[in-house]
Image (cartoon, rainbow, N blue to C red):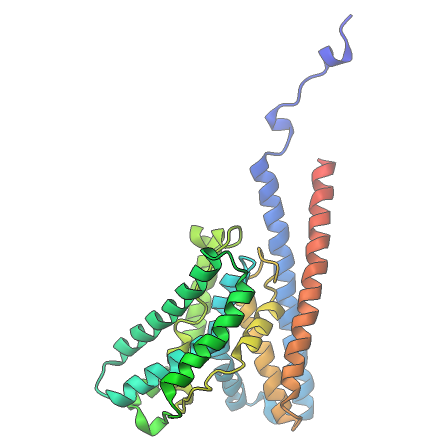
Length: 332
């Protein structure tokens, strides 16, 4: 008489979900969680605008909205680069110093040689930022040192280089040609060029992260991309007055924008659009503090609180997501 083992039909591959199918469902679940967080940020932004607008109607004037978008454009650009780093469970605290060095060197170059083509200065600024990124990447990868330790050190090293190069000098708007300033202050079809740069960079980065293989691999493997290549050039063109203190404190705002934008500080999830939304939310808060005549120093406290709350939420969401995935695997 045949035993149960002999009569039972062995499971076939068709009876069980394939590994790729399980991975696909897990990826969709993570994406849904990310989208929900981005919608939450958008709702929080809308609520903030509504509350402030009720108290001060000029907050929603087109001119003020344009000012908010201009103020967050550079932050959004740097936040996109930081997103690529954070996705790989790393962090770059030296972005403010990199932006500062690039801004001063490019502005000073235009002051010394005003006939230099602007495109050449842009390329030079990108290469300079990339060089600093290579230094960070080499120290992290070859030295096997945690990125937070490396970039905390290079934050001060790069800022020191900036002070050495500046030697107390300051570059003003009158010292550089209009073609350089127009990089950020010019308009295209009535829209400030700086806002368009930010939109294009966010869109391209988002497409690359979602659709291209190298971008998708950032969600799964370690990497050390540079986080501030173009922003230094635009910083100089935007603010015109540049010295060795340019972009000081930018790193805190960038990290805050990234984590509040739903990029998991533990790596593996998040989008460029989310980081840009985070930058817009922080910029709107800063503008609201000014409009309501509140102490602007509250912004730093808000940024610090945002980082703590966002990291805590990331930890809770990650644990719940992992638990849900494990339970789903057991049921199958």
